Structures are given as C-alpha cells and as structure tokens.
Image 1 (cartoon, rainbow, N blue to C red):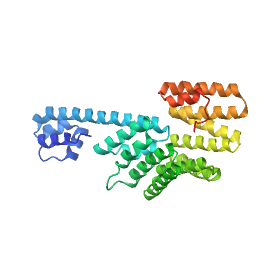
Image 2: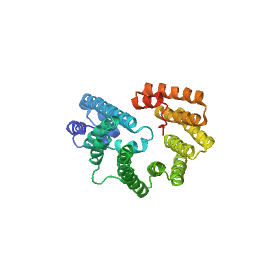
Image 3: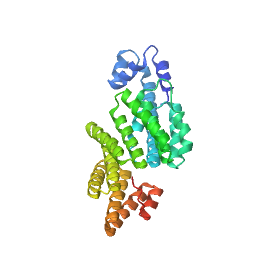
Image 4: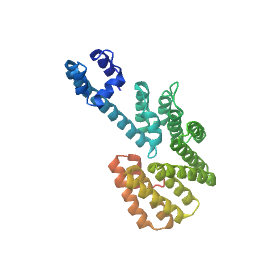
Length: 300
C-alpha cells in the first residue's frame, strides 16, 4: 500500500483524521463535505479515491502473482501460510516474499530461505511467525533436509498454539506427518495427518482437508491398504474439483493412477496419467508434465 496517499488527505482536509475520511467515503462523503463547507475539495477527494482504488488493485495484483509463484513452487496447500504472512505484509516484507516466491517457483529453495528469514519483523503476531516457519520448512522439505524442515514445522506448531490458530496448527501437524512418512514412520505420520484432517474439517478449510486426505491416502498405499488409499484419494479429488484447485486435482489423479498401476490395472492408470498431463500442461507446471509422461510415482 502506498501510504503517501494519506498525506493527500491531510493536505486537503486539515484536521480530519484518516478514519473520518474513510467513514466519509463509505457513508455519502459528497453530501457530508458539502455540509461541512468543504465542497471545493470534492474534485481533489474524487481523484484521491480513484488513486486509492488503483493502488489497492496494484497491491492485490502483486499479491496474486506472489501467491501463484509460491503455489507453483510448493504445490497445493500453501493457503495457510499466505493468509498468515502475505496479506499483512508491509512494503519491505512484500519485496522479500516476492523474491522468495520467484526463487521457489524456479526450484531455488536454498536461495529462497534467506529471503523468507529476512521477512521476520519485530512485534510480528504468532500467526505471522507461524506462516514464515511453514514456508521455510517447505523449502527445507523440498531440499530433502528433513531434520531442518521438522524443526521449522515444530516452531510453526508452537506459534499456532500460542495464538490458538487452528488452521495454522493443522498445517503444521500435517507437515510434521509428511516428515514422518518420509522417514518411514508410517503410524506416527498417520496420527499427525489424522489430527490435521480433523481440524481442517472442523474449521471448514477445504483445501487443507483435500491435502490431508491425499497424504493419508499415500500412507495407506505404502502400507499396502490399496482400497483405503483409493477412497482417500477419490475424496481428495472430489474436494479439489469442487473448489477448483488444479494442482490438487493433478495430485489426486496421479495418486489414483499409482494405485491402479500397483494393482496391475495399467489401462486405467494410463488414462489417469493422461488426465494429469493435460492439467499440468494447462497450469504450466513442467515438472508435473514430466512426472505424468513418465508415469512417475511422485504425486504426493
């Protein structure tokens, strides 16, 4: 946000504080200014109102681009981190996050970490700290540095509990579960992911629920419980279709394809991989296209 806009308010209507100006905009501001004897300032304030709208639109566009870059870098289920830290970002933090987002989009996770770390500020809320811990943890996870990733996710868990941030807590628990899955500790992984799923369902966070169901499905596939795995992935696919998350749809379809491949039903698997390729091409995710073409079992 360009805060110099509020300097215009001061110059145009001396003595009126920002909150009054905003109230004037909201509740018939022209009529109020006329009654205050400030009719001559209406053209200036109309210009200011348009400048404010234009600035807000530019900031929203920046944030949308940042969100897309992060989503491409990490896949689905980054909404919690985005809500926690991006939407409340000041100019300097937004610059750091923009740079980090571009780096993650290009898979330069190690180079992105310092920019995420530089986004910490004094007096940040626990939810904002939680969000950055999640993003940093995702970088380490993508680098296969699971010990560092778990450390960041544990910090996120603590920060979420500090502010009773249920969505943040569910995201942290889910990520810790994914770490245990990578370590081969499947029962622990399942416990954390079920906790995350329960919270996501309670608060109505569909994207988180879909991601948790998909990750639980992966664990059941590894355990050899293919019917359970298939059920969880189909539920994940249904939710992702309902909310229009293309990355999640590709992930779920790929996981379902992996199950049919394991069952030896190769024609079904191939059909699903072709659907994945179509989606990945549509959203411009090259590594996803490569996985789909190679029938790679990495859709988690």
